[in-house]
Image 1 (cartoon, rainbow, N blue to C red):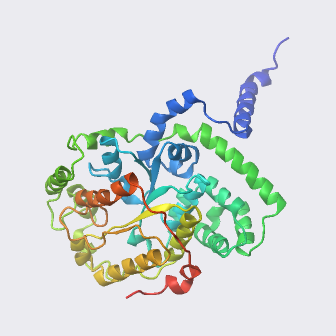
Image 2: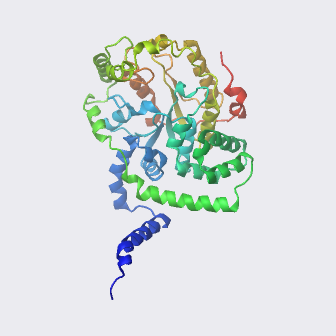
Image 3: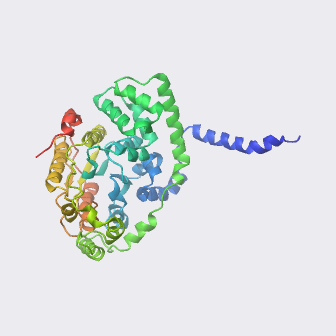
Length: 420
């Protein structure tokens, strides 16, 4: 029997579509032992990849937690992988922990909150590190475009299905509606509007999101893991510069040597950053350009409180890092040191008064030589200072935190309050 010519043309396509559909709608399955061993190198690569699909995804992050990786939440500073970077030190010296980097330029509290939803309950009683940048706390807060770029559909839907009529969830829904804007999608926005009003999802909405989540999770499992940026060569190159033994004095000497070698300009920042980012724009244009910047009043304080509520609900033991701004750069651009001090005081009050006591305040180190790699990012001595706190936190037994969330920190009153 001869095949119909049309079937010969479209048959392979139909079969391929059916095959993909079967994969996406198939039940989830656990990886066997051989598969898990094969995935170890992939997870190691994903931990330092800073790939957007890893950030948005679920499978690799949860497998990493099961293997003992530690989430390091942050933003652009995580990508600056010099030899003193936490991932480089942990890998070189085969420490009992390995960071899993989560964040890129533009990821802030609300982005991180949604990324956390992809962990489910796997953050329960875990240790994590959270680098908190003062630059997040602008008048407008989370940038709309950045939020939508990093928006994780798995996280959004997971949160939507778990949300209940609580103050925290109502505020979260309102913030998602405002920040995502039209980027939230019609069906998602409709659900968030109901949750913001304190209403339950409709039966049709719940059924839709459950089916959609199932497809997204299968898609993540089968396809997204194929697109992991490989930064292992960069990691290995950085490791080669480290001393053979994990010795603080030797690491300090290395930090000073690298800093001295790589900073030959009036701001004591990386020569590469100075040449490629500042000079082309014209240095003189930055003079007094930040004198009106104010990080003391921002909706970001509300978003940050939503993150703290998330950590408290999972009994997560979190170390918060408060980095500085380069003092010489701040003086040149007119960025107020008084404003920066009050911003850090406000953040520390929000943390300490709710039982978050693992706070590493480096905000007064912006004038230390080789502490910053550029205008706002940690450099050689800066990463070493972080390591001196992070290493004992992650390798030694820590007391159980006793967190007590206060609704006041969700209010606009607090978001606009100045701590003197």
